[in-house]
Every structure is written in structure tokens, then in C-alpha cells.
Length: 228
Image 1: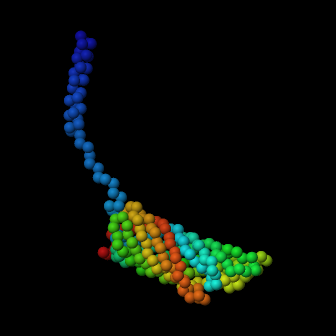
Image 2 (image 1 turned 135 degrees about the vertical axis):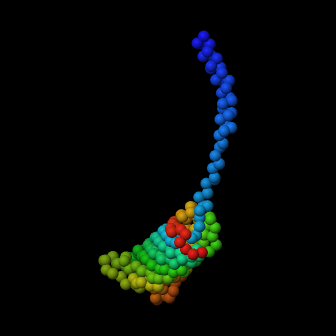
Image 3 (image 1 turned 120 degrees about the vertical axis):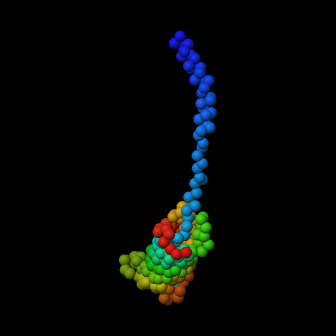
């Protein structure tokens, strides 16, 4: 009798199983999960913005040089936004590399040169949406040009920079006129491409205009802190 009861109980449980499953499915509803939209929180009411990236410029290190220099380095900027459109930017950038030299009897070929710029100026935010924003800037300041550190002859004696077509070491006027395109990766982080016309005045040849560009990352801070 015990075996019969067990068999009846098992058969009853098997018969009721589909009903129990259907009832459980009827009571459970799949939760609706909103699609992930990392750019849905992008807004341009932040107070601060910091940028760091790799920089490049094409520069001619002397008034008598034919060959230019391809210099690479860094570009660091900080912007204080006063409205969603208008801000003030401070910028430090450095460029480093080698330069061609005039034919000379000193054995100087491809000496090291560098520029360190420190500038500031207004920043204006142009057309923008949640995916991309554009900005325009006019930065002004100084450029410390180092052109003499490798100008030594084969006996280790200093060679005058003009003897090989170079500028002398000095701090000169500098300006960067351009802007940037920021591709948003989240509500605070963006990838930036920033081209510039770089103006410098080292005296003997007047104001020169060179091309510069940098690429890097932007991070926004201090949301809801500026006037619209």
C-alpha cells in the first residue's frame, strides 16, 4: 500500500506540474529595462573643463633656414566657463624635436630645438549636441624658444646661432587661433581634436604663422554652475 500511495503521489505531482508552471509564468512579468544611453546626460553647464593631449607643430627655427622642424609634445588646457557659451582658457604647450641647419663647417646636423608656450584667452562654444561640441579660441601669451642647446662644434665650442641660420634663445610673442571638436564618450568625458594657426614673433623675420594640432581627452567638472 505504501508503494501504491507513492506512485499515486508522484503521478499526481507530474499531472499538476504543467498547471503550476503556467500559473507561475502568468504571475511573473519580464521587467522592462531602459536601453543604455551613456550620452543622455550630456549637458554644457559645467563650470570647469580640463584637457590634456599630444601635440604637433610644423616650425622653422631660424630666419635663414629652408628646412622646417616637425616637433611633437604636449598640450594642457584649463577652461573656466562663465556661461554655457563663454569661457576663459589657460594653456601650456611644449614642442620638441630636431631641425635642419644651414650648411656649415662646424659639423652641426639636425640639432635639438624646443618651444614652450604659455597663453590665455577667450573660449566660445559653437554648435553642439549630445554627441559633439565645437569651440573656438583666441589665445595670447609668450613662447620660450630654445634653439642653441645643441649648437657646438666638434671641439665642443659654442657656435653663434646665426652662423647656422637659427634664432637665438628668447621669449617671444605667441598666439594660437583655432578651436576644437569634442566627441563625447560620456556626460563628462570627450575625445578632442584641436587644430590651430600658431603665430610667433622672434624678431628678425616678423610674425610667422605655423600649423599646429593636438589630440587628447577632455574632462568636465562642476555641473549646474554656470549661467545659460
